[in-house]
Structure formats: C-alpha cells, structure tokens
Image (cartoon, rainbow, N blue to C red; front, side, top):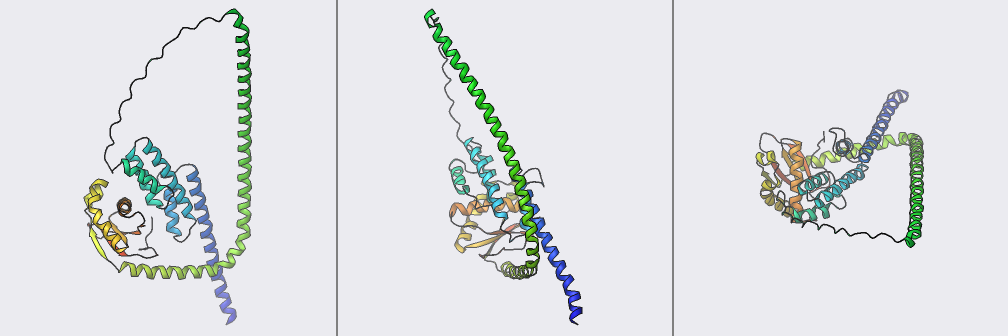
Length: 337
C-alpha cells in the first residue's frame, strides 16, 4: 500500500512543482519586458505592446506579487514629468490627461499630488486660460562705426589671433577627449550589462533547487490565501451601503465638467461612510475614466482619503456606483483582460 501511494503521489507533486517554477519564470520574463518598455519610453503606445498593458497583465496573473509596484511607480513618475512640462507650456488639457494616466495606474506616485495641485490652480477641467499679453517688439540694435586700428596696434591684434587659435585648439582637444570618454563609458556599460546578465543566470541556476524544495509549501500557502480572498470577496459583494445611478450619456461624452456635479454628493457619502466602491459600467474604458473622475472628486474633498474601487460589468443599460464597507482585500475578483 505504501509503495502504491508513493507511486501516485510523487509524480503528482513533481508536476505541481514544475508548473509553479515555470509560472515564476514567465513572470520574470514579463517583468523584463516591462523594464524594456519603460527604458524605451513605450508607456502607452504601441497598442497592446507597451508598459501599461503589460503591467495590467502582470497584476492579473499575480495580484499578490509586489514586484510590479516599482514599475508602476516609474511609469507614473514619467507621466508626472510629462504633465509638468505640458503645464509649463500652458497645455493644460494635455497635462490633465497625463495625470489621469498616473492616477489610474499608481495613485501613490511621488509628486502626483503636488502636480495635480499646481494644475488645479490654473485649470478647472475644460476652462480656457487667459490670453497672454503680447510682448512689445524688440528695438533694433544701433550699428556703430568701427574705427580702423592704428599701425602700432597690429602686434596686439596678432597676439589676440594666436590666443584665439590656441583656445580653439584646446576646445577641439577637449571635445575629442569627451568623445573618447563617452565611448569608454558605453563600452563599460555594455560590459557591466553582460556581467549582470551572466550573474542573473547564475543566481537563477542556484535558486532552482531551492525553489523546487519550497514549491510544495508555497503552493499550499497560495491556496489558503486564495480561499480567504474568495470568502472576503463573497462577503463584500453581498454587503452594500448605498447605490447611485449614473446617466450613460455622461459616460459617453467623457466630459469632466458635465459629470462633476453628479459625483460631488456621491463623494461626500463615500467620505462619510469611509466606503469603498464598485463601479458598474458597460465597458472597462468607461470604468477607468469614471475611476479617475471619482478619485479626483474625493481628493478635492479630503486629500488624505485613498479610494478603493473595483469593476463589475453592468447588467442592463443603467450604469451605477455602489458603496461598500472598506476592507483590506480586493472588492471583486476581476481580470484586467
């Protein structure tokens, strides 16, 4: 009987360990692709092959893996920088679009609050900025007559020419030295990358055996966490504080100035009840746009409150927002794709 149990259980355990190890390697590959997209500034384009899409995909595959947070923060910081430049150029609508992306992806991005405050002072969600005053035309420079140098100053002029030639030669030598230094740095960086890649492979190889030994206990722990999360999600889905209908045409127009009056009383209810929300919309595009509007609305009433939200596709043609008790797990088990 013992021999029979070993014959059945050992292959099953080895299969589970191999599957889990393969999943971890796939996640590592996905993180590498995300890092490459961030380095190449492929944040939201091209479609279906950019950093933001891959971040959402990673979160769907591994919702408890914290390694994705630093990547999301990097993308958020890039959008904050783009928003600051657009605000300085008085392109306020474009700046708000960048900030919307940052709020949606990583609302804890450093500098996001300050950037939004600076934009709110000059931009009210669709209002035009005041026309700038035209600068007075610059006055024309007065051309002065140049006197001819006397004969006794010829030697002084030649000396200046020689000094200028020496200075030009020094600049040329300095430029050549900087170019050589730049090439050396590039070569050193290449060697460092190769060394890091080699070291990474060695680390993966050393950790492979340890990962196999820990796979069984880790799989059991994950199953316990999933069961607890499922139970919490079931309780959350059946507990509702209040529900508010939203007109579909407000979502179709995507006009922040039109929907703002409808959201203010809902935001106050959220703060009064310290609630989290489930957004019931016909599409995820409407959900993400409405999430940003709701986040900014709550933030304007209380900057210290962090809104928790989840998505559920609407049943019928009436979108709504439902309020639920706050908690520490995801409201609904939803896939990003």
